[in-house]
Amino acid sequence: MFRTDGRLADGRTIRWYDRTAGREPSPDTRDLPTTTPMSQIRRDPLTGERIVLAAHRQNRTFMPPADECPLCPSRDGYASEVPSDSYEVVVFDNRFPALSDAVVDVPTEDDPLFASAPAHGACEVVCFSERHDASFKDLGLEQARLVVDAWADRTRELSACDSVEYVYPFENRGVEIGVTLPHPHGQIYAFGFVPPRAATELARARAHHDATGRNLFGDVIARELADGARIVAENDTWVAFVPFAARWPVEVHLYPRTQVADLAALDDAQRDGLAALYRDVLTRFDALYDAPLPYISAWQQAPAKADHPDRELAWLHVELFSIRRSADKLKYLAGTESGQGAFSNDVSPEAVAQRLREVADAFDGGSGREVGESS
Image (cartoon, rainbow, N blue to C red; front, side, top):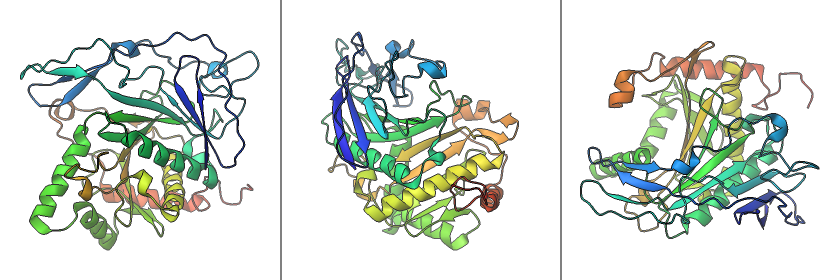
């Protein structure tokens, strides 16, 4: 992997990731106004949760026509967010960040009931490919591996920032999910705190370790492998399964077989295995209903700081899930789910796992090609 850094017209950083050396950063010729983030974090006095308020994001770009996509390469007559006529993978600072170390004029309130502070951190956009009509499953293995390397590089660098406590890569795909740009991309949020789901998983891991002396995530993987009913796919370094208590109609978690703290800590074999299995599972997702499946891909990794008391228990994994419950129906959160967080699922995890295993029969090794189709 070769990384080349450049500057966008308003001072943001852009990073090109290539498989070969020799790229020169391209100048951004646009006349862009500087965005001043005014994000604030307020603590909910009833739950203790931190809520990010980012009113400057209200007017961000929303579903532009394909010939005005800001994530496509620039061309004659049109300058996008990527000031080059081609790219493999790029990562740039979000123009409308919810979290930013550039937040100014936001006071800190130490009020024990209504506490607030500037929303420090970072938000980045990760473009998986220059192809506007592609998705992650359509990437070749080398391209998918390059995305993994970019995720790892950003995890390493952002984790070293003083303001960052947790690095969270994720992808939203599909208009049903609320995507505002259809170009294949994900995002990275570098939080100044450990967000709620990660904190809950780590607290459960701590309680399990204190009670048994074992790692919770390792025990879950071992049980799933021993049972086998919810296994979707696996290779030498990774395993994918529908979780025992799946919340969503389609939900698959991917874990490395051995404990790894975060994306930056993956070795070459694990990165190759992740690229292959992740692409395989996403291919199965799209084969379920013969149409692109809307999904969220949520990376769970260790807290950024080495002195975090639960970092030693973390086990990198990705939680993939979709709100589609049948070919023509979506799952909307019920009152019990939205109001109380008490999920119910109409689909058996074991049935979903079997269906995801079966749909692979029509594809050649997770390549996304129909059997017999030439490359």
